[in-house]
Length: 85
Image (cartoon, rainbow, N blue to C red; front, side, top):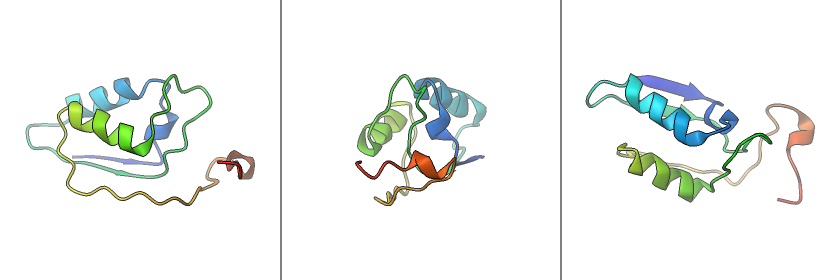
């Protein structure tokens, strides 16, 4: 199993992160992710949550539970939450 917390939105290239996680897992392994999808400024891609789910499924993951909150979280710095979003 792999657990990621407040992690995937730090990716410069989300495809690399997902591929690395996939390669770390044994057959029928489980990836549990928790945290916001507030892409870092250096991210090459900033997919929406729906696009992210598609990317994850196309990488071979079966999504058992997917929950998205619309609430923005200032977890890096209070200025990270842009009220205009």
